[in-house]
Amino acid sequence: MTPTIHPAAHVDSGARIGPGCVIGPGVVIENGASLGAGCRVEAHAVITRHARVGDRTVIGHGALIGGDPQILGFDPATASTVEVGCDNTLREYCTLHRGSKPGSATRVGNHNYLMAGVHLGHDVQLANHTIIANNTLLAGHVEVQDRVVIGGGSVFHQFVRIGRLAMIQGISGAGKDIPPFCIACAVNRVAGLNVIGMRRAGMDAAARADIKRAYQLLYLAGHNVSAALAAAGQMEWSPGAREFFGFVAQAKRRGICAPLQRGAGRNAENADEADGEPG
Image 1 (cartoon, helix red, strand yellow):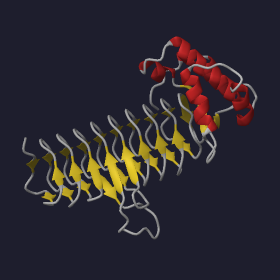
Image 2 (spheres, one colour):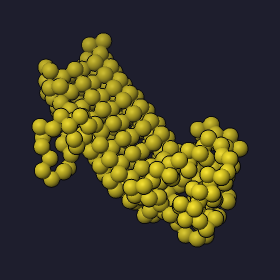
Image 3 (cartoon, helix red, strand yellow):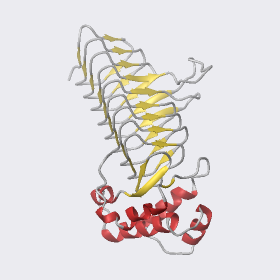
Image 4 (cartoon, helix red, strand yellow):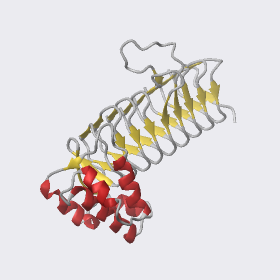
């Protein structure tokens, strides 16, 4: 199917536009950019020569895909990219900056939904099936694993990792890693488990209970992180709980978020009653 390109758009002849794409007015697509089949690019979006976008992805009004990193002294001649997978929605004014080093890339997987004003800094690695609400800011090298939900207005420091199926309350901040399956809030705090998210992902009651046991050992048993990992190493765990501790063991650069308060254990102990909805 031939692409539909508005006469007021500027699409360079060297850009690759897949079949069935719809390009709106005022859009700029530079030489070397690539769009897969069935994409929709809405008015005044800019897709630079550094961008590679997969099939059936929607790019909202005024979005910028493939801009230069916000690094003092960055050389614009650096050969780096933004690589966006398939079936993503990037709403109005999202900004995705390219990698910071030669051959590096900012990567977005498949089936992600980024709401208006989301910023992905250079070298961010965003997995699959995530939802990121309005005006969330991810600094360079942040890693977001599968099925994470982030509430609006949240901010994340460079190199922070966010584990699978974590949920972050709106207007939160993190300069430390957020373990899988946790609900994060405030600044560098967790407040229980995303039980609803685990249920929706198909985790059965036994798997959820074992992850709750892991959470309690790490956060509620009075151990520091090293002691909790040592104790966990002497015990049997389900795959989800092993994933939880494996993530924590790798959190060497920034450390992990702490519990919200000493009494926050009530959220973990009653985790099956938590609603797990976005903040």
